[in-house]
Amino acid sequence: MTDALLSAGIDRCRRAGTTVSRSTDAAEPPAIATPVDGPRNGDAAPSAPSDGDDTPSPEALLTSGRPVAVEPLRDPDPTVVLSRVWHNRPCGRATLFVVPTDGVAAAVERLLSPPVGVPEADDDGRRFHLGPDRIRLEEGGYAAVPTGPDLSWHETRTPTDPAGLHASASEQDPDAPLDTPIPEADPAGSQDPPWLELRAGGTVLARLAGVDALACPPRARFPYAYRRDRDKQIRVVDFAGRPVQRYPGFTAMRHGGFRPVPAPLVPERIFDGPTAGWWAVLPATGESESAPAGT
Image (cartoon, rainbow, N blue to C red; front, side):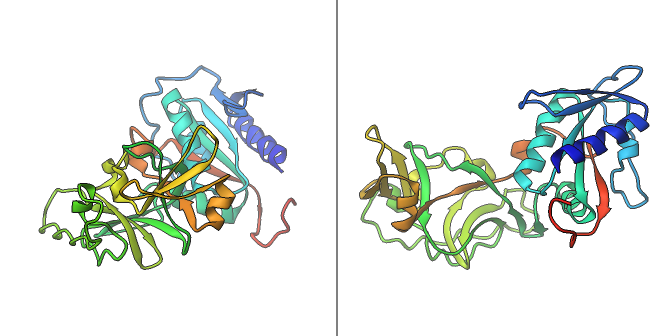
C-alpha cells in the first residue's frame, strides 16, 4: 500500500513538471519533488492554493516554486501528520500527503485547517490531541494518574469543580486537604491565557496555568508521578513524593492502577510559523472508505 501511494505521488509530481529524487534515509521524506528551474527562497509562502473552497490543492503546491516532500500516509494519525509538516517546513519544503481514500484526505484536511492541529475550539478554549510524549516533572520523573476513562486535555476560562485536584498549599504541606479552590474566571476581554485541564471523563485530574506550564511542571500538580530507578523498577509516588508502589514494568504499572500522562499536541509548541500554503493532500485512488483495507 505505501509503495503504491508513493508511486502515485511521484507520478503526479512528474506530471506537474518537477524532478523527483528518492531517498532511503528513514529520517528524510521518501521522495522530494524539485522545480526544474531550481527551488526559490523557501521563506516565502506560495500563492494561496485553491480548489474553490480554500482547500490547498496539489496543483498549487507543485507550482509554488519550492521543493515538495512526498509523504505516503495510510492513516490520519495527528502525531504523524503534524510531525511531517513540522519536519519539512524548516527545511523550506512543502508537504504533499498521498493517501488511499477521500475519507483519509478529509481527515488530514480537517486536522491542518484552522484551527490547525486541534479537534475542537470555542470561546472557552481548545481541546488537544494526545501526543506520544510524557509530562516530565520539575523534580524528575513523569506525571501519572489512576487508570480509568480516556484522558483529554482542554483549555478553559471557566474552570469547573476540581474533583481530583490538589490544593496549592499541598506543595508546601503534604498533609494539606485536597480541596483546591477554583481560580476566578478571566474577566471579559482579558488577555491572560486560559487554564489547561487534564480530564478523565468528567473529572478534572490536573490543572496548569496554560500551555506554557507544560514545561516541567511541579509534581504536586498531578495526583501521582513515576520514575525508573537504577534497579529498573518503576516507582510510583503520590503528589507529595510519598512512595505508593513499585512495578517491574509499564504493563504491571497499568495493571496496578496507574498510567503515564500523555502530553497534548499544542500547535504553537510544534510550529514556529504559519502552515497555510505548506501542505496539500492527494487521494491516490479515490476509492471509498468502505473499500477493503489494502486494496
